[in-house]
Amino acid sequence: MADKLRNLFSKKKDGKFKGRGQRLNDADSPPEPSPQKVVEPIPREMMTEGQRQAGLAALARLANTPGGSARSAFAYQHGKMEADLGTGAIVDDKLPELLAVLGVYYRCPFIGPEVLSKAEWKEKIKSYLEEQLKVDQALASCLMIHTLNKNREKVSECIEILCTYLNNILSHPDEEKYRKIRKSNRNFSEKVMKIEGALEFLLSAGFKSCSIQSEDTTEEYLLFENEIDASHFEFLMDSLRSAEPIRLELDRNPQVLLANQASKMLDLPSEFYRLTVEELKREQRQRTESLEAASQLRTKAMREKAEQKELRRYQYTLIRIRFPDGLFLQGTFNVYEHFIEVRKYVSDCLEVQVPFDLMTALGKLLTDSDDETSLLDLKLVPAVLLTINIKSSELSGEKSFIKSELLSKMETI
Image 1 (cartoon, helix red, strand yellow):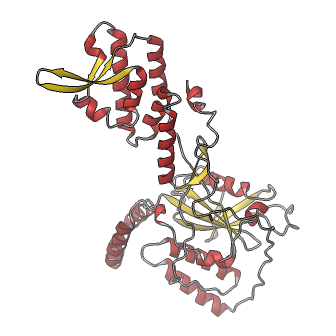
Image 2: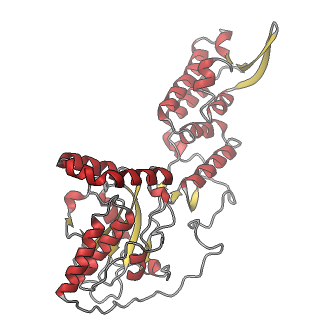
Image 3: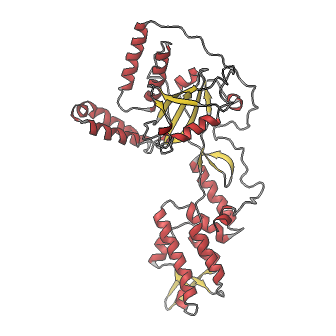
């Protein structure tokens, strides 16, 4: 049954929901791929020890800025790396807003190749399932119930009620009371009708809407007047219980940035936060006002608890990987994904598959033991900069480590 549901609409109609398979922020017509850009490393001038210390002092001030924003996180990490590399660059924490990424986007392999926002996928999936009701009302309604309703507990409760309706008819085929459902019934109106797809499921079972007059009142009912088909009922209940929601896959939104782009594109869009922009601003003000007094009173455990609370405000994290040729690879991740997904992402973006290590901007080597740890627990949130160390001489003669198709999409700002 699960296989049948997965392949429910495998013969999807050509022309339905056709899309360009691009992000929403792309131009109206896709640009022609440009020739691969080869970016030569920029020569670096050595700085004096005094300049280096001044740079690190400025970075320390950034690191201690209340709130730990994505801007200061990226600014600190980029600046720390530049200071260590001897460029003398000091990051300005008052740069005009320039988003590091325009939003959070998803793919839905079940429906098509498009890359869209979650809100747009929700609308598209609903429209798609409503269309499929014309193809197979029973299976489409099962998918609607599991996909279009957020509260899993209420969905489970509705499923049990729907199955009870059918089982009662099977167990008591000659009793009329089990063949009709009064729509005003509290159990039905609150636990069934509020679940999208539930009514369509009952209609697919053979129920029909009708009005029944009783004395001075007219009530709306669902009536089952068909011959009982036990195998069809069993099929419906099995389908309903085994169906799974249509899921979205987070799109990494891969981008390759030049060093000057990476140092400017610091701000995160609102989708990265669990709270609204207004709530975030209010929290920021309250935190800033109480920071000095609280810091004198808090124990280490209290500070760690506050730090975890701060990190859990984020749903996503933006990770940048600095390559030896000066380019930055950027990708979007859910904060609960494991670090192994970052490794896989980097590996998929390499021109040649070679072993490599990843290191934080503070010099911590991320090892295999970190692979099954969430990005949240590793504190790689909400925006971090990692450095890649290629452990092979195979690419020593290459001008770029990143796949040519990604390089061809690079844009200048």
